[in-house]
Image (cartoon, rainbow, N blue to C red; front, side, top):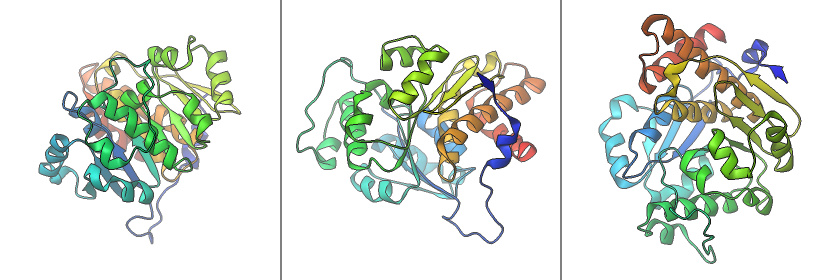
Length: 292
C-alpha cells in the first residue's frame, strides 16, 4: 500500500483573492448531545478556520453554548433542528455524528415510514433520535457530500449506502467501529474491499491511518501518544469535512489525516504529549500555511 504523497497538499483548493463569502465552502455540522457537549464544538472550531460558513445544529443546550461563544464563531450560524432542512440543502458538505448518542440496542431496526423532521425532533431518546435523523437525511439527500462520524457512524447500517444510492460519503471509523460496521477486522485488504463494495471513502483512524476508496488506498503515518486524548478524532472529522466542501473526497480524507497528525507532531516539539484537542485546532492552520 502506498504512503501519503506530499504532492497531494498542492492539490487542495485555495481561495482566490477575488472570492466572496460563501464561495470557499459551506459546512453543516450536526452533532452533540446532553452527555457530550465538546465533541461537536471541536469539529466546529476547526471548521470555522477553514471554510467561509459553518452552520451548526445541535440539541438546544449545545446551541445555546455556541451562541454564547460568538467571539469564536463569527462566521457561523447556529441552526435550530426545526430549520435544519434548508441548511442541509445550502451546505456543500454535511458532517453528522460528533458527540451524538447511539441507541443502547444498536441491533434494533426502527420503523422510518412516514417519518418527518418535526416528528424526529420530538423523540426524547437521543440515541433513537440519532438513528432516525441520520437515516432520514441520508435517504432524503443521497447526492450531498457526507462525512459520517462517531454516534451517527455507530448506529448506521452499511445497507443504507446501497439502499439510498449514497455516492459521496466519507466514513471515519476507529478499529472497533470498523468491526461493528462491517463484521470483520480492519486490515488493509478488508478496508479496500469494503470501500469498493459500498462505493465509499473509508478513513480508518489509528497509529497509522488508512484511507481507501473504490479505486485506491494509502497509509498516513505520524502523530504521537498525545493524540489519544478525547476530541482529537472530532477535530479530524471537522477538518476532513471542511476540506470536502471544495475538494474530492479521497483527497480530503487523506490530506486531513496528514494535517491532523502533522499538527500533533508539531505540538510534541514544544509541549511533548501534553496537549489537547483545542491545541490541535490552533496548530492545524499553522501546519496548513507551512505545507500548502
